[in-house]
Image (tube, rainbow, N blue to C red; front, side):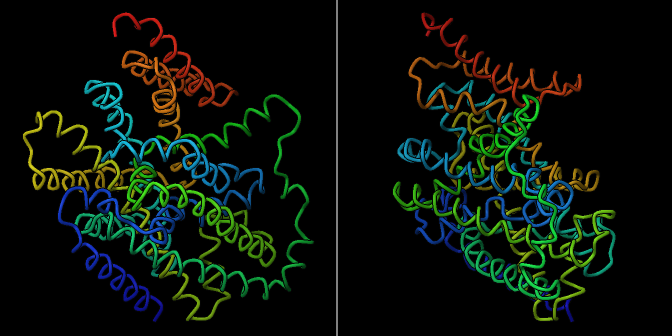
Length: 458
């Protein structure tokens, strides 16, 4: 009964997305919903940017192991990203009327930099998409008993087809519907499990005080770890096509800015629900952390919730992850067609051909992510690693490109290359210092030095 209901729920969601895809007439509709989303759809789309596997499974799993201090990256870093994007990036980028983030680098630094930027923009999404597929594989494993890798492949087929048919319009409408349902589902599960555990007060009083430690110890190493945790999503996701396309799909500049702030508030509050639910689960089963904590939450729902609650929870959770995955697949596909294929074709592609190229990109990235998902299963690490590369390569060129008039192409390319190389070296030697910190610092330094050294030539 549960499986049949969940399948019916998913089919309904896909039909909603397919119906919404009728609004897609051009590549602009497919990538940015024609820049016409109202604030309700825009806010819910931004809220759903990360509200998927890493929030419900990854963050709750890390929280059970290390408390609040171990989940600075997500949800707190993710909320910081939306806040900073609304404050410092949205207005300037929206006024430029861009299709992709790669278009900014082409407009600001030239076509050569656009091509190089695209190489740094698109690949990180493979790990992020893989994390969502792992989550769907875990859910299908809990519900049906099928192997996780089989669930990954089945999920990849469904979500890739859904993305191929739909576009940003379909993603935005389904995001709105699923955001409402996932919040209701988590609230109901939290109430049910809290009741089973003897009430909220009973759950919280038995938690070790160290669980709620939020600030670092007054030690340099601990402070650096804490800062790097904030930076992974808080700064690393700012130069990402996924966030960019959701913000730029808004109907106006004012809507885009307000949506960032609303989504940040929603994410910071609603993403705490899975953390509380994990505390209830640990109270009911003290030895829970000895197993795979990523499946703790769905197992708790199966054991303690009624069938209607199970249907609501698993159906909405799968749909929310599908929507997040769909957008994550669309992002690199848009970069692939708009910033790689289109320049290489020397603008000879018409809009229909560009749309077809984007859909081919959807298929390609879906396949790559499926292979990664079958090889790795740690959701939280997959998501984190997908953002670090953007931080050490693109954050400096984007920020300085917007706010520093002397920034030029030579500096931008040097910042990307040396920032990434520094990060890779520190990763290889296994330094105690978080690799993203020296990578980011060198990226800024290299861009400033490169820009200043080549001012006369430009």
